[in-house]
Length: 312
Image 1: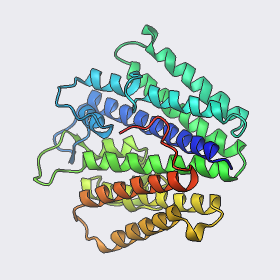
Image 2: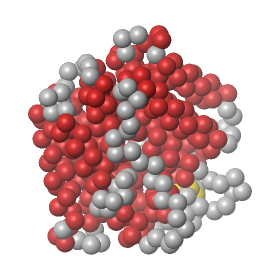
Image 3: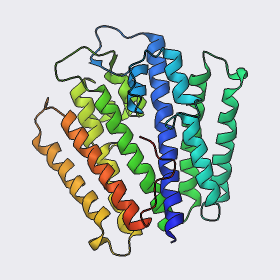
Image 4: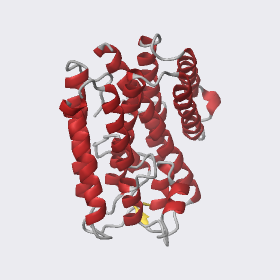
């Protein structure tokens, strides 16, 4: 496969996953803020301000709830917004239309055109971000489903999946780093249920974990639970499989070796860390390793090509 095609597919996967997880987070916070946050709930910092922090908004200005949600939905100038991510995905899909299926291209194109309509007054000023997040969440799920049923399971599919997996793991880690309680125990403005809903893991958590959804068990679930496909550990395992399948010489591949070491580190930490142990440092280290993996992927498979539509 040409490095240019692999590069486009990898970033197509990343952009689709970024749009999906931003939509999930916006929807979860929107619902929580409408319902109110009972004081008795376990606290986790995850509100509209936390969402902006996840996407790298580092200024100290005050953002209202409506401003924050608008930046994450229809702001084309914000690289991490849903609209910007979907637009980048469409542009990437347009360049690889001979590799992806016609059905997948149609799904991406229709999603983009539909979301562009969200900038019109008809969506409603108050409900616009919520309706848009529902739309993007449903449409990205459809796109991934169409890709899984209509694309060959070859190198192209491996790079598409790899991009999505890297982005999912990175987004979960960003959410955890914002949501985990601070070291000094300062009170937070949300709770663990918001975080679970933001990653779509609420029902999976209830089935897999007997503990109440407090900060520590939720964080361990999203980091280490390999039975949950969007946990960091599960994404790293699937990423390893994708690179092994796509690489002609996986035994000498730097990305494969680094992913393998990261998977082993996560398994060791899962077994060795006692309940209640500090997890923020692990999240930070894992995110740095993912960034190094991303760089290794660029150097080995894309001839050092710069990321398309890079953010943060």
